[in-house]
Length: 355
Picture 1: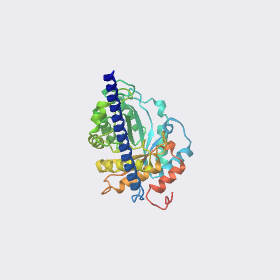
Picture 2: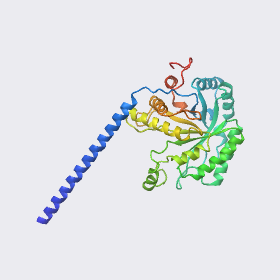
Picture 3: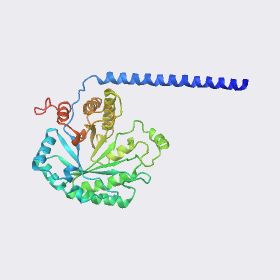
Picture 4: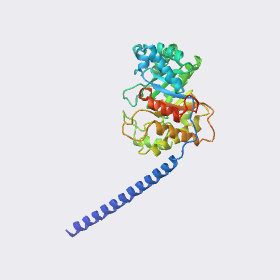
């Protein structure tokens, strides 16, 4: 009995030490978070000096290609694009079916849309926004590893270019930084678009914070169905994409951070890092949101635009290629948000000064 009592005492002592260690660890983590938050808050206060640009993109809803619209609706769309200095619109024209095709019924009004954009917003490029969930380890979606599927994707691209679209905009998710099939598809698509004098653009997830973490994620979270490690582009992969694309749009939104200053720091960091890496070789659009965050975090248009401008402030020089923001999305942006976008982002001109 004495031995049992001694064992119990040892166990209770061990529990106390573990609890004490856990408490100190939690306190340290909370203290570090408080310091980071305080530093971000101080950094966030000065007004950004950089203004935005007149090269900007917009993701637009599928109804523009799939449903009829009146001339007045097309005219209003053209006015919105011109007023907000939108140079490229990614009109949702898919998604691809699993075999790499898009049923014609989904885009029956595409030609009418393209003609209307040329009439009411001359100079604005209408691109066919095409994508699908990437099949991962036998799950549902599109299998880009299959050469026959890639060939049908290219055949579908030709259809949209024949309809008059100014480019093809790919959004396949998830795309991992070892996805050679995706890069091969980009090579083939670039040959097609350049032979027609058109553009190839692509949406990508925000880059990794640390490239070396990708193998760790891969080991801990193997790809299986919907459970997989984050598909973040590494430095090498983003360079490879930039060498193949005329435009790269970074989906910087969906920021699960609790304060506006931390979310702004996120946008600033990705703006500076991406433009320094690929801004001399391809047009870059930093994605900013106008939808309502699901979890109520501090991610909104005002924070994103201010963060992007702070990132521009940190550049040693402007990129050689055009750059701007990509607004996600046309169907969630209110007139009030467009007014704030003009007031805080666009260069000061008599027709947009003050919104």
